[in-house]
Image (cartoon, rainbow, N blue to C red; front, side, top):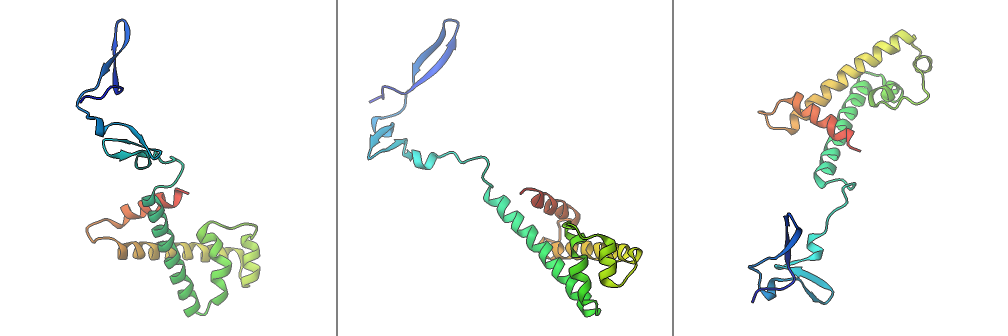
Amino acid sequence: MLVVGIWNFSASAAGFTPIPVTGYTADMVVEASAGARTLAGYTTASMQITDPATPVPDAFFDRQWALNVIDRALNAVAAELVSAGKDGYFEILKPWLVGEVGELSQSEAARQLSMTEGAVKVAIHRLRKRFRILVKQEIAGTVDASMPVQEELHYLLEALAQS
């Protein structure tokens, strides 16, 4: 009942020598039925190799989690500025929080906010500091108390870096 056709190759001084693999019965072997090949009950469809360029589901979930944490912190910063009576500040200064400054200069932002350029730099610094605190608070709300927030912050940055 041993199957003929399944071979292992052994390296020797004379080259590779085929050695029959034992222990497989005829119904466990590769058979061609209805276009599907099976080996020991596994179909070729279940043995597909995924493309290494496709993101792993865990990486996708982690990235979405990180984006959600950032979004909630941004919304909290915006709400704080609105409650402080600085409605237009967030939309103008937000690019410096998320790293998408584009063509807007700090001097142009100062002109739009009727501030000096130095005051805008200080406002951006304070906004970044508050944003950092709010991101850490959001992380602390999503992790177990035994896990350090700083460690999870590094993980968040790694998840965002994987695009």
